[in-house]
Image (tube, rainbow, N blue to C red; front, side, top):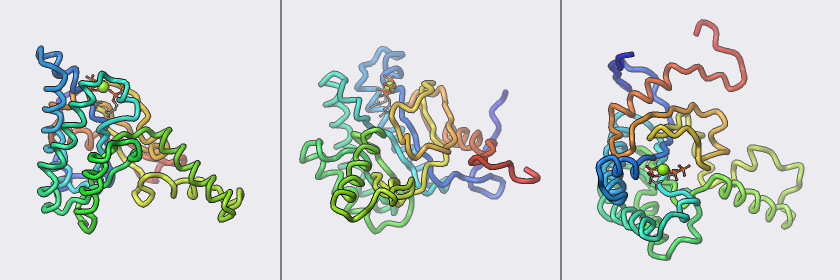
Length: 250
Ligand code: IPE
Ligand code: IPE
Ligand code: MG
């Protein structure tokens, strides 16, 4: 099938998902295919992040969530972890001012408590500086694991219970949602995973209940606006039913 020409957001376009989340995968394989070190794949991955953030803003996506480092990624070699943390620091130092001037609001999800004080401070700085921006929201999932997020939420709920501020009959899905890392944000409409892997790898398990999943073969460093538009096009052809029946006439 030839790739349809897509024009999202414009008059000839179609519905743009409000919240797009991306599992940015395939940096290592991108590098290996070129005989380069994995670190080079990660470095080029940051360039893909820049492109994607810009494109998402242009397309009119409200919320873009990027899975940058998982709770399980600590099991990688120390040298690779150092590279990834170094790139996070570099990205925030180099790009924060521009994100801010583009009216992007930065949010962080994941476990911050176990991060080193300097990384924690940088993440707080990014959130603090952009707090009042009302353009696109960029959510960075760093040291993020969905089971860990749900566990933290349950723990906080249990604390409310034992303090007598809630009773067990107050526990509903909505209430538990309020204890997640970014409770004010809507669930992702579309989750994209690059590199051909077809799994969630502990990403947004609670929030993805009714997300559309699109898996693309592209390795993350090659991801660009055309790939994003193609994924959105695929999304636009899906019929979301949320357990109900298809809308009449659709
Ligand atoms: C994504 O690329 C980056 C992170 C998970 C941090 P990978 O490093 O997972 O690349 P592959 O999957 O080994 O190709
Ligand atoms: C998921 O990719 C995590 C991020 C993209 C940050 P992984 O490469 O860690 O996932 P698995 O190990 O292939 O499932
Ligand atoms: Mg991977």
